[in-house]
Length: 281
Image 1 (cartoon, rainbow, N blue to C red):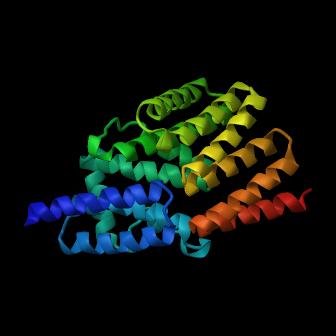
Image 2 (tube, rainbow, N blue to C red):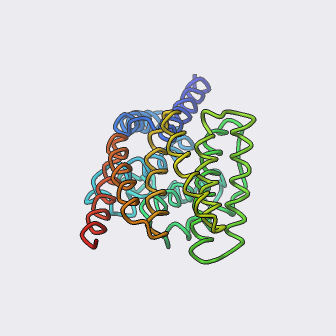
Image 3 (cartoon, rainbow, N blue to C red):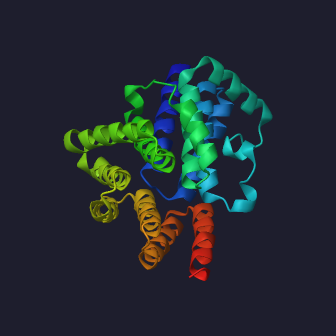
C-alpha cells in the first residue's frame, strides 16, 4: 500500500510541477498544490513534501497580492509551518535534490521580481548542485532555461564573460532540445535565450527580432507564462536601448498576459513600474 501511495505522490509532484511551468492557470495550480501538500502530510511522505514546498512558494509569490507575500517564510513556501521548514533545512543539508529545488525557486522568484542581489546569491548556490533525474526531465530543462536567462542578466550587468558563457551553454542545450526533442515545448525558450545572447553580444537589431519571435512562438504553443515573460523582457530590452515608447507597449501587453495567467502579484508590481515609467515621460 505504501509503495502504491508513494508512486501516486510522485505522479502528483510531476503533474503539479508540469502544470506550473507550462503556464496553467495559477489559481488551479495553487488549489492542486494545497490538496497534494495536505495529502503528503497525512501520509507522511516527507521527501515529496519538501519538493512541493519550494514550488508552492513560487506559485504563491507569483499569484498572491504583494502585502501577503513579503515574508521570507512564504518565499520558502513553508505556509507558516515552522516544523516543516526546519525539516526542509535539515534535508537540504543531506540531500542535493532538495537543495537544488530550494535554491532554484529562490533564484526564479528573484529573477521574476527583479531582485538582483537575491537572484544572484541563489544562482551561485544553485549552480553548485549538479544533480538531475530522468523522471524530472521537463523540470530540469525548465531549470536550465531560467539559469540561462539569469546568467545573461548577471553577465550583462557585471560585464562578466563567465556568466555570459553559462548563458550561452544553456542556450545551446535548449536549442538541442527544440531540434531533437520537442519544438512545441522548447522553440520559444530557445528563441528567448538567443535574444538575450544577441543582446549581450551587442547585436541589437537581431536581438529585437528574436524577442518578437519568442513572443509569437510562446503564443502559438500556448505557454502563457512564457509569452508574458518574453513580452516583459522585450520591454526591458527596448527600454535599455532607448526605445521607450515601444517598451511601454510591450510592458502593457506583458501585464495583460500576467493577469490572464493569474500571476496577480507579478502583474501588480509590473503595473506600478509601468506607471512610474509613463509618468516620467
